[in-house]
Length: 112
Image (cartoon, rainbow, N blue to C red):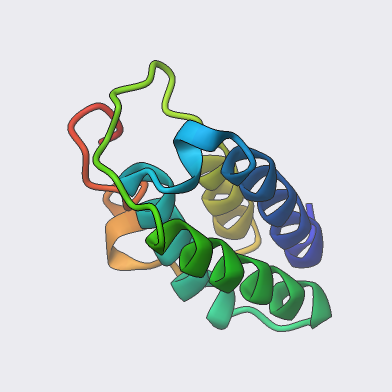
């Protein structure tokens, strides 16, 4: 998978998750989105910039109604972010510290 395809897939999946009312302001989604934003900033290409813009909007909207983890099983944003990180690792892209330790970035006990 190319870097652009990985960024596009992450962007689409996080957007779908953010459309779920209980997920939009969840600390899990917002944590994963913040970590994804840091990763996307390091990537080249238009798709990464588009994904970065969408994730920024997701963070702004979610921040308006932020709430704690609802302990959903499974935690929806975790798997798309793990696939994104795996795709980047396969492409030998730089990893963030949290992602290299296997943390999806949200910090809740159910997701780490």
